[in-house]
Image 1: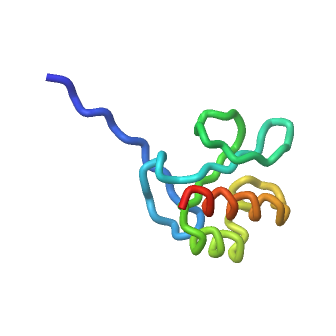
Image 2: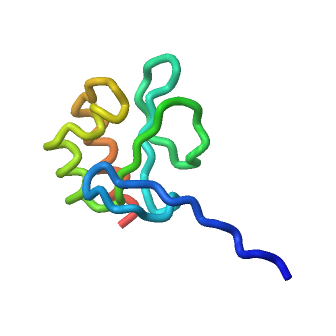
Image 3: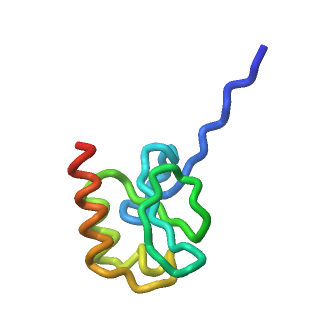
Length: 90
């Protein structure tokens, strides 16, 4: 009998709840210092996760949680790109 695969869990920086990795959006600071959205979850660099809920993104933005997790100041364009991504998936 085969054991069921363990689903990786990650914490949302907005609401601080643990969820399945595939249910979250990943923002990555690449080794070159660029900030990118990582749909695959496999890009190299420092990553932070946020729920696909605009309210969680607002909380993360207000508390500057993404900035702290990625150890970089996050420009408004990245937050806007995350918001657009959430709208297209909704």
